Image (cartoon, rainbow, N blue to C red; front, side, top):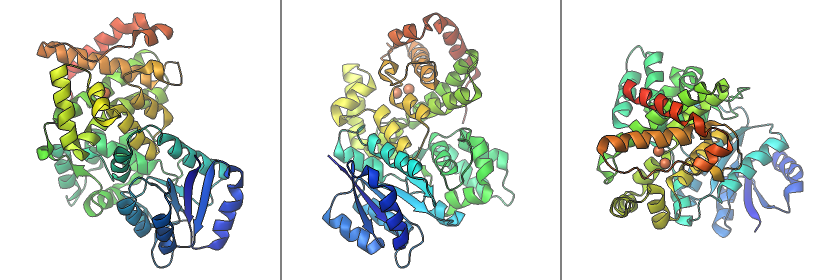
Amino acid sequence: MKKQLLFVDDESKILDGLRRMLRPMRDEWDMSFAGGGKEALELMEKDHFDVIISDMRMPGMDGAELLEKVREGHPDVVRIVLSGHSEMEAVVKTLGSVHQYLSKPCEATKLKEVISRALLLRNILANGQLMKTITKMTSMPSLPQLYVDLNKELKCTEVNMNRVSKIVENDVGMTAKILQLVNSSFFGFPTRITNPGQAVRLLGIDTIKTMVLSVHIFTEFDKESGDFQFQPVWQHSMEVAAMAKKIAASEKASTQIIESAFIAGMLHDCGKMILASNLPKQYNKILKAQETKHIPIQEAEKSVLGSTHADVGAYLLGLWGMSDSVLESVAYHHNPSDAPTLSFQPLTCVHAANYFSNELMHKEKGIDNTVNLDLDYLVSLGLSDHLEDWRNICMETISEGVKA
Ligand SMILES: [Fe+2]
Ligand SMILES: [Fe+2]
C-alpha cells in the first residue's frame, strides 16, 4: 500500500519545489500539499496520513500549533518540521510535538532518507493502538531524584554546567531527548554527537533552562503508576552502559563504537520505561505473567501487546532520529543474530553486557536468569573465547557501583 504524506507550507513556491523534487517517489508515496494549518487539518479529517512535514513560520496557525493539534487529534502520524531559520526558542518549544527537524533548503536525498526511515520504523510495531500511544509521546520519564536535582540546579543563581551535565548523563530519558535536539539538522553539526555531557555544553544553559523550566520537556516517573520498579531498571541500564563501553574498549574498538556502546547500553531497555509509564495496567499484567510463568519479559510483552520493549524503544528512538547503530542495539539486544549486520558493533557489547548484568544480579538474588546469551552469534563473530574476559569486566563494573 502507498504511504500517505502531507506537506504544509504557506509559500506555494516551496510546495511546488517539493512536488518536483519528490516526483520520482510517486509510485511509493501519495503526496498531498496544504497551504496552511487549517487546510492541513481539514485534509487530515478526510484522509489518513502516515507523515506530516510542516513549515514552522506560517501566518495564522504556525507549525508548532499545527503539529501539537496533530499530536492530539491524530497521534499515530509522524511529525516532521521542515523550516527556515527559526529561532532557537521556537524550536525548543516544539520539542514535545516534533519528532524531527529538517532545515531549508533540504536536499532531496536527505528528505527522502528521513521520510523513508520514519516509514520503515512503522513496520516495527504491529499493534496500531500501541503505535498511537508511542507516537504521541513527548518525552521519556526520568528518575525522580535526578528530575528534582536538575530542576533545583537550574533554579540556582549561578548554574553549574558540570553538575547539569552529570545529572543529564545519568538519566536515560534526559539523555535521549537532549541527543534528539542536538543532532537535529537545526544545529547542523558536522558529526553526530553521542556524548550527553558534550550535548549539554553545546546547547548551553539557557536552552537547557528553556527545555526544563518553561517547556517542561522532562517528566518525572510516576511512582504510583503500577508495580513496575523504575529504580532497578535505571540501575541496570546505567550498569549495562558502563559495561558495554568497557567491553568495546577492551576490543580496541573506535571511539565512535565505544561512545555508541555506552549510549545504546543506557537506552537498551528504555522501552520498559515507556511502556510502564504509558500503559501501567497492561504492564502490570506483563510483570505478573513473567513472574508466574518464569519467562523472559519480552515473551510476556509480546503475548500481551504484540511487541516487546526492544521494539518500542527502537521505534521511539528512531522517530527521534537516533543513529542506526543505537537503534540496532536497542532493537536486537535480546537476539543479535536477527540483526541485519553481522560484525563487532555496539550491539555486540550491549547484548553481552545485558546478559552479564542479569546473570550477576540473578545470582545475587539466588534465582534463575531468564536472559539468554546468543552463543551462535558470538561464535559467528569468532568472539566466544572473549566471554570470560567480558564477564570479569562486568563484575568489576558492578563492584565499582553505579550511583545517581
Ligand atoms: Fe531488555
Ligand atoms: Fe536489559
